[in-house]
Image (tube, rainbow, N blue to C red):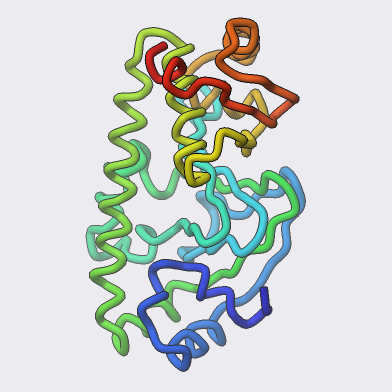
Length: 232
């Protein structure tokens, strides 16, 4: 990807003409992070963080000090939009979307990751000249709220194997229905996302493999029978 086309990855900006996209691009700065590096934290200044290459996990720290994974951001995804509007009430929307205040979120690189960063002052200036971005941003926040609600319902499922099966099927759907998928996080992170322990997750993966639902080689998964997996 050409260095100066980062914003074209982002659905928020894809309705703008090239000149407008380039104007936004000139306001961004690029940073590279290695696996385990903190991309942003509650102490970071308000900014829009766009993943250009690699992936980033977004999590919060619970009152008992445990990490709670919220989502994994892939290229074209972004975080931080609610904190851009802290004084305009949008932080409340982000609280609903994440079940955590916007100030309590962390972003961490899952591997070599390139991000584009747009500062709050520059973003607010863009809204003045491109008011259509406000509607797109509201739509994006609404989408996050819907996904957060799905995850909340997802975590109420009684059996871990049900949650795991749904997660694998969702990955397949995101890959265009391909039965070959790759889990984009470590087993510890996936266990956190599924609301279980790494030991239980390992047992459930082994169960799915032994029963012929999937074939697995580390994080690479082949879904052998999606219909059976859906009915688990």
